[in-house]
Length: 497
Picture 1 (cartoon, rainbow, N blue to C red):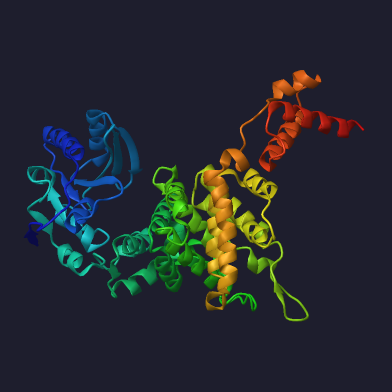
Picture 2 (cartoon, helix red, strand yellow):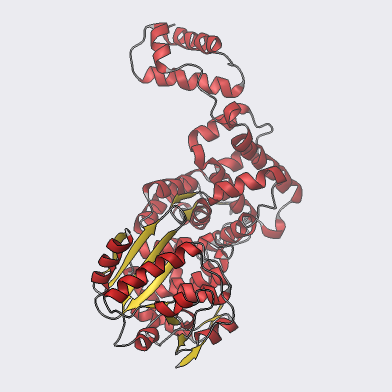
């Protein structure tokens, strides 16, 4: 066993140090040894500030009871993670910081045995909590029996023991997620170990698979990770709906088979969602804010756009037809794809809002392409696009753009791409800079006013009239309350004539 001090590390925020000081008092009162292990130390040694503060704590004995007591002591929430294995989470939210403390019982009789049963050697480094608190910026002495610091120096992921992936197949996804996040390489010895465990991936809970997959998509290196999963056979186990697209030819318009095209769509999304440099300067900041918005904590639109890109043509194999002249068509693949995607997002336990977004992206991913072919983008067309898609409109545009950029490769005509990018930006500009004018005009009259003015009863007709007024506003035909009422009157006259 090596004991070493870190030469450099990231400084934790004072609020985290204060919280762990209070936690230490709770463990001390119980005369219970406690070790910080894993991600926090790894990130400190890398000088990396994590996106969220999650601290793994390992203790001998009853971790569940300790976690309940710690939650009460800190005024946090107790969340059981794995009662059989003895692990729980304590969530503490303050105005300054949200912290998750994951407490688990030793996997073995000692901390050294526990470290030997973890996933990767870079996560098998530990320090006593009390020692960490003495020097949070440079914690020491570190317990590092598997030379995790050597792996950190090589930026390599090395499995802790031969059954690492068989004991928990989720670690296959975690490996590629860490590679994407940290820009690490996978030690060659892990490949055969992973292959032995791939078939067991469907046994892992959807929630755990979802968290790793979407964390992968949050990075700017999702495509290499997904391609590696595909080469390993893990993608088939994770999303079997993608398998029929492997090797399925698409015709002259595409330069890749169906699955290859979907993987390339993720690569294109990686590329332009990293900094939005592909788009006009005024659009970059609002687009970045939009994509970073979290529909569920730690799960942003950016990750869902990439998931939608991966799944967008999942309906093609079932809809493929070959005409007498050799032309290949996939008519209706967007409807079939949305239905298949509904099963995928249900298995992955996405929230209702996330599931709705992904399925909507797949159902409508062709629409921006149709709009891009129109000689003129009318205000009515813009209004109707966003009326249908709402706040998912920009995401749909970005899924389409990733799809478009993945379609023809070097065969793409630059003049056509410029024209289509211009049309894309027209729609994005309308959403971000002309919303009250074109996308969602402010209401000039409400249903009550219409009922009073024309002696109408509540019912669908009121909604139809309000919709007609809003569309006329978006077109610029109605600007005042008087004009809105006049339009409603004309609509009523037409219905009764």
